Amino acid sequence: MAKVWDVPHLAAGADRPVLDPETVYVYNMRFCPYAQRTILALLAKNVPFKVININLKSKPDWFVESTFGKVPVILYKGEIIPESLITSDYVDELFPGPKLHPEDPTQKAKDRVFLEIFNRMIMAYYKCAFAKDAEARETTVKDLIATMQPIENEIEKRGTKFFCGENPGMLDFMMWPWLERLPMLDCMGISLPEFQTLKVYMDNMWGTDAVKEYGLSTEDHYKFTKQYVDQLETIDYDFLIPK
Image 1 (cartoon, rainbow, N blue to C red):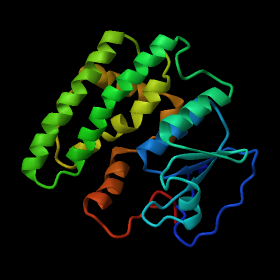
Image 2 (image 1 turned 135 degrees about the vertical axis):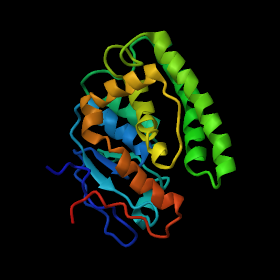
Image 3 (image 1 turned 60 degrees about the vertical axis):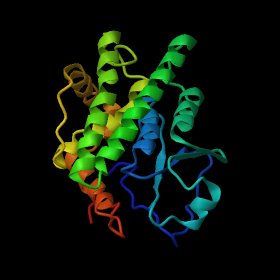
C-alpha cells in the first residue's frame, strides 16, 4: 500500500502544488536524514500529513523562493517552518499526542547537549562515506569509531531501552536517521566494531512503529548514496516508486 511519501520528487519547472491550509505538508526528500527527523516526529505524534518531495539537484523556483532551499519544511495554516530541529519541536508543541521532549527542563537541556555530541558522529559519518581514497578512509573510520564510543557509553549509562526511557522520545528520533544509515558503510567495504549496547538499542528502535513505517533497508540507502559518491550528474530520487 502506497504511503503519503511515495510521490515523485518535483524538479525545476514543476507547478507549485495547491495547498489546503488546514492540512500539514512537509517539503521532503525521501532519502534525507534531516527530513526524516520531521517525518518521525509526525508519525510518533500520530499527526496526519502529506508530503511534497523535492528534487534537491534540480529545485523548483517556487521552493527556493519560499524556503532556505533545504528540506525539511513544514507548511501549515499559511506558516512556513524550516529546519529539522525547529520543525520537530514545532510538531511536538503544536499537536496533541505523546510528548517527545522530557517534561523536566533539565533533562531536556541534557538531551540537547548530548545531541550536540552526537553531531560529531554525523560529521565523521559523512567524511567516512565520501572519503576519496583508501588512506583518507582509514583515517575517517578511526574518527567515526571514536565518535561512536560516547553514544555507546551514554546508552549504557542511562540503562533504559531508549535514550528517553522505556519509550522513544525526541532525542531518539533526532539521532536515529544516521544510526539507520551506519550499516550502509559495510556495503562500501568499511567495517566497524560492534558496539553491543548500541546494537540492542538499534534493534529496539527498529521495533517502533515510526521507524518501521518510514525506515529504509541498508540496500536502499546504499543504492541512493552511491549515486552521490559516484558524483552522477542526474540523481534518481524516485527508484523506490513503482513505475
